[in-house]
Length: 171
Image 1: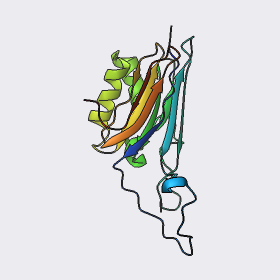
Image 2: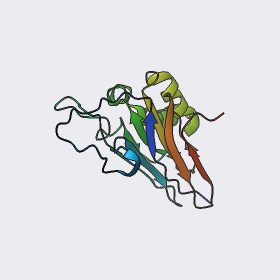
Image 3: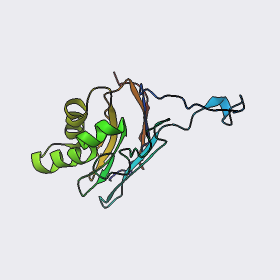
């Protein structure tokens, strides 16, 4: 049975600048003052091995005018082919330069690496330290969620009842 895997992600340790706001009420519109800043990514595989990836981001506060993050650039922050689906988060410029998502698939295709080995290599060797994390699933249902930052919100659930939730590095 091939699991269906859905995951979401968000990095910790990324420096975000708070926006300059005038005449803003002191009360937060979100319970507990929660922020809407962050990336939400999803990767999935169905019972036939079909793969899909999607990534949405809250973006950087006070970003430069005209700045485009990694999310809309296929191959940088989001990628899926017949081998794997990948969704990345972190500092967009580093993810774009490293073509994080596509590199995972390329290492699987051209080097024959497993999903875990390919994703770990890209996060540890290609993306600058402290800039990236990703979630990925293979056509056979292998799941990996490596990151090189302080932490990354992540979760996985499969149709057979397996679930994994984490923020900090696994020990």
